[in-house]
Structures are given as C-alpha cells and as structure tokens.
Image (cartoon, rainbow, N blue to C red):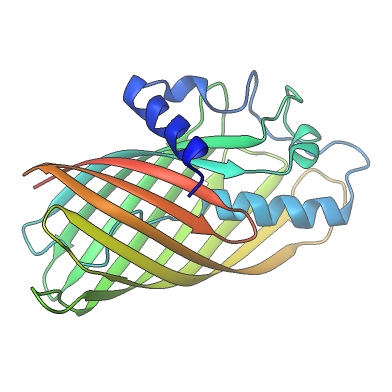
Length: 244
C-alpha cells in the first residue's frame, strides 16, 4: 500500500469529512460533444472498477446470527485528463475518493448477503451494489477460511451513461488473535452504453482484480479493515465496522 494515500484516507475517515473528499464542485458526469469512442471505453472501464461491489472483508462468513454495518472510503487513482473532460466542474483530482455505506448479514448454510450504497455529495450520482458469499472452507485454529462471491452493481443518476457490473471472486483469510489478513482474486464484467445521443458504440470490458487486506478487531463489536486493490485502476480503502 502507498502509506501516504492510506494515511490520507484514514485521516478523512476519522474526521468524518466524506462530503469534502469527492470531486470538487459539481460532480455530475456528462459526455461532451466530440467525445471519442476510445475515451468512452476508458471511462466505462474506470467507472466500472470504481462502482463495482468491493467486499472489503475477510473470507469467513458471519454465521446465521451475524450482522455487520460499516462505512468505508476508497481512493482511486484516476486518469485526470479523462475525468476533466466529463465532470461538470472540470477539476478532477489525481485521486477520486468514494464513500460507501456497507451492510452484510449471515444466513444458514454458510451464506452471507451484502449490500453497499453510494450517493455522491453535490451530485445526482448513485450506486447500488450487492453480493452473495458462500463459504467453501470454514476457518479454524489451524486452517484458513475460503469463500466465493458473486456480486453486481448498477450506476444511476447519470443521464448520459448507463453502466452495470457483474463479478465473481474467491477469497482466503486466516485469523491471528486480533488480526485477520486476507487476499482475493476475481474477474469483473463491465457494461456501459452512451445515452447522450453521440452515437457511440456500447462498451463491454472484462477486468481482473486482486486485493489484499487486514481486519483489526479493537473491541468485541468494532473493527477496522484496510485493503489495497490492484487492477487497471488501483485503489486503497479503509472500512470501519460494527459487528454483532
């Protein structure tokens, strides 16, 4: 992880400054006249990676009675030139920060369901995403936990662009006292289409994504997760959870 980026995200999370770390000014996305197909391809790929469901959690499931609620903030290293051409304020930073509300509930048979929601400040942009997780191997004192995830997301509030994602991951984790390191690898299918009337072709992209992270339990019901994702667009995240 880049310690400088991670430290900045951590400070922002602690200060509660989520409304001040997104794109400056108006954050709505619009495709300008003359926008090229190659730029749409790049935008759909970056936006798909940003809006896709990101578990930000170890592999173990929560159990039938388990429930987890948290807030996270992720930093994405975006293409400034590309984003300056499509955001209303034309003042995109080198790192785009995205806050998320995240919920997860344990079900019988080693299954969890999860949901995340984003509503960007000063913008009509919204993202809904969900996951279904199935345990393949329950963790123990000597063995790791292994699970598979199916997830999807949909972007709304952007009149010029339609975008959705579907993905599958496999993850592994192993707890050691208050620390639970984990890692995962997955594939993401991104679909986007021009709704602005420019006549650009639909975009379909497949991206591989790997991630590593660690969960730190401070108190019985409170934990912090730090994660780094590596893909066409790298990102770094911190998530603060209350678990029952």
